[in-house]
Image (tube, rainbow, N blue to C red; front, side, top):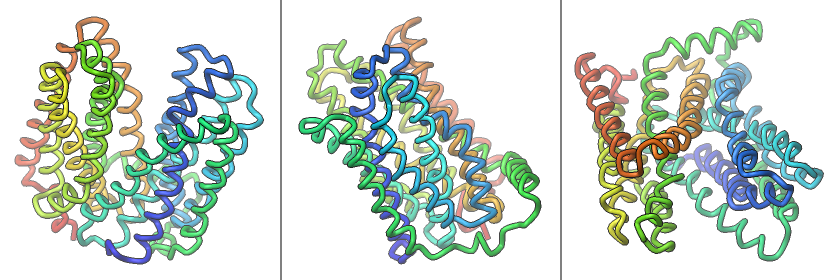
Length: 397
């Protein structure tokens, strides 16, 4: 199924829209917001508002796709990806940019749970490995997008770049239109719309695997986004060259991309929660190591550990939800996990910033690392006490 037509098409569509969408984030969006006169605080809010859109609406879009099928909502999401970039040309104030970003966030709010549910429904065999390959393609867009946008800004203004983003995003309609529909549409419950959405959200919230996966994702993203925000500043404060400080995040993301399929394969063989807990241990160790390694190229070690930790956790948590959530409400479960993940993205820099202001870099990362290790022990111990019932794909039936 990793080489199936449906998998190739959904992966291609996601890579196209994610790469284009990342072109519209950093450095393009902060540059555009500053040019419109946004202050530092409001600029930060503009950059993060699309994440908040996903936090609120991912479960609802997941439930809607459970009702009417994945393909329809992938087309709607592609329409937001392709259409919204052209609206930026009509923006003249920071407040208008805030509103446009909030609406543009609907694109990722739709694609997040729906694409994961589609990939998961292709087959229950080697599911974590398949999700690992899908995540690798998605994350490649995070590398390609910012570099492409920065290069384009040398030759055109932000509005021109957004226009190019819209044109590139429109290419995603081709693979989406060719997608075969999964079984979700044919088996969808045709209860009244409001009742079905409410029932789906309640069912997802009552599924232990959803809370376990979402909790682990939220914890990991809280730490990872704290690192993204403050590790470069820690390096500069320690006298590390700016190039090394910048390379830290590139190495982290590069290892994450390369190791995703490996993490997925290990998860299929050794258990979803086992590997997620191992990833939390790796991240905890990296956080403890980070303050004492900010002395040049030694920073490569925690950067690589953080990337490996992400590769162990994320395919595992998504596969866990796929194996344990109600098949009729799979995208709803993915959406709930996505909301918790987004909460971690928002909370991480805020929590770390407050702690650094109160303590310092060393104590902040030491505390976060210790908490991560304790959380991993709690997860693993709980797993053993419940008979490892949530751990492996083979148990999913």
